[in-house]
Image (cartoon, rainbow, N blue to C red; front, side):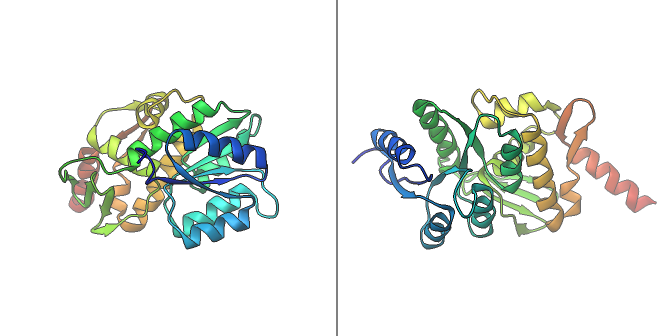
Length: 244
């Protein structure tokens, strides 16, 4: 049995030659794959089956890829890699806002696609031999099961959102620039818009705030630099509020 044969990836593209090319390389790497030629078919397949990843073209007939991402995120946290045209920076930002985890620009190198697929799957597969808990007031993170509890309630996070809060929580009070977060959280050379970090931070805060305003304030913006995870600063603010 091939090493990756238990991993199934959904390829969504209206160009048959692109689907064939991606399927060929996925097969060479040992992955199973299925195909959808349009957004409606992709959503239907996602409703019927759990996939390990989706390779999604943004330019699709009937329902475009951005709408597909939004619909998928209503039901699944499956990792999504967008496939976009070179100049579509606005679409990439919209895709991240909708819940995509990464993007690839056409024309792409199939080998690059495989490296990005492997990198994301490596982080989403459970690899830890033991349960390790990272705990702060009102926040518990379980790396093995990739579970986050805020205010005692589970959060629904995309793989990239989980990687981001885990990395920040593992490095409390350390200030990270956007470039540093792209390098450390995305784990490979990322030639993307730095707003990618801002988008993920914004979405993560919004999700945390629905469960615990206290925890959402732990992710602190360091103006002119980047971000830090600061439970100490949050505790100080909370104590002052109580005293006042």
